[in-house]
Amino acid sequence: MTRLYLIRHAEAEGNLYRRPQGQYDANITPLGRRQVAALAERFKHVPIDALWTSDLIRTQSTASAILKYHPELTMHTDKALREVDVGCWEDRTWGEIQEQYPEQHRLFTQDPARWHVPGSEDFAAVRERMETALLALAAAYPDQTVAVVSHAFAIRAVASHLMDRDFAEIPYGDNTAVTTLEAEGGELRLVDYADGSHLGSLSTFARQGLANDHRGKKADGLIRAMALPEEEALYIRCYRETWLASHGNLNGFVPQLYLSTAARRVREDPRCLVKLLYGGALAGIIELDPDRAKPAGAGWISLLWVEEDMRGRRFGSQLVGHAVSCFRRQGRTAIRLHVSQTNAPAIAFYQALGFRVLDTAQGVGGPQYLMEMDIRQKVWYLP
Image (cartoon, rainbow, N blue to C red; front, side, top):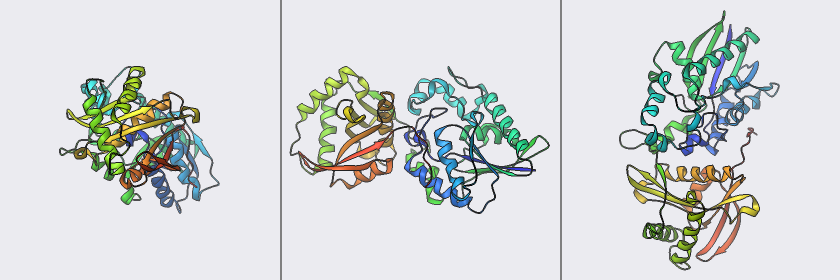
């Protein structure tokens, strides 16, 4: 009998930014790195004979947990262990998908056998390739123990089949949750599903509780381009409130200068100034400057603002996700911004997303930190 520990990857960008990842090669987040460390401790004294993972960045980064206390192992990759290919949905927002594909979004979560969008992979194909790959591993490592790192939808597809239950009845496992299988005689048996007991306060699900509305649904915002000059007053209000929160005064605040610059950027690319809507109400805005840090290979966030009564529901993270998507498509390797040294909440927010302080500077409104987040798509290895 072969034992298979089927592990979901750590929190990745799509989980944080509320974007379907599918086979998009997303990095793991700072929280994901801490989850990987917790996973390593869980398997510290567990005998492991082989390590396999899908070939995507987020699973390889997670698989590095096993290597910390089992350095003799080799990390093997297999495309058959990948997440479902969600076709034209990849790197879009869940809010946009819910608006444009309401029925297909419902089917994806409730009845994926009937779900299909352009370029997507059939549900049956996902389950079949996963089970074929797992049985092949069992045959290659008879009477041994194999750690296998894969993805939520793919693991859920296998679990629902082995439980003989509808897909909708099987919850998603948390990031780095462990599903235990046994294989013998060419058959798989489910022993335990989605155990995340090693996570504690690092649970993605527990933290995403902050992102739920009063009905328990995920608070997925809808990104829309801002219209100038029609929304000039709104833009100035948001910029003014951000400035006051950062500096405590309006010294150096020149609204017409910022407005004219924003209008030029919008004419060149509407994605440079967008608003996030939730339930028809404004949740926040973000302004991107594609020129300011271009010589350094970086993109620049000029303005990030979230409506006060919308804070605490991850809308700021979703707006940063828009910046990552835009600048990564332009080949940028990082995102930079300035934040007032006195704005402790903003500094903590950016650090939680992966920004670090590069330098200090004297801005027109007071001393500032220059912060940067690396957005290169690369495997992270647990130290």
